[in-house]
Image (cartoon, rainbow, N blue to C red; front, side, top):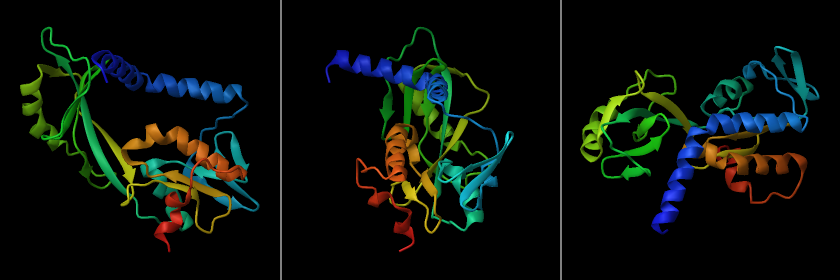
Length: 235
């Protein structure tokens, strides 16, 4: 890529990351315009009422012949009581925004692979992200990685005061083979799974949605779904 392409890519990446919420709202509006309905409820209430699945919502029970579980690291909370236990792990990660000092400016993401952190210019400031932490999903945050990488990051770029009082923490659901589960739940007619994308959930969301929709409707899948089958863990 030439320098101009790099600048355009960095600008687009910055807009993409800062506009995720706006993009989500836009997609929800489009969904509603196409006739889609949104309900609020507890996904863990999902249960079988033959021949349908039912979930309880604030608007009353909602029944459907097919249900997709796309709850990321919280999927086991719903699937466990249904007898579906797949070997999901969680990689936790942290990030925090910092004000640049003086007239310091960053126009593109910078990855320090040797020391295990990344700096990215965002609307909120300069985002510093850490490497992965293997820990239980609900364990207290332990952002000790920041203590290790910040001196190195400050030596590379003039980071000022942090914007947030505490670092943000995210939980990324992942399987040992680094592939998500996309497809029917074992021995549960009408129940479909779409989770375990690790760090790539936002990136792979559109492709996952297309694949799972094609499988549910009986269309020819655009790619071979076999590698993503939940049965790879039950054979």
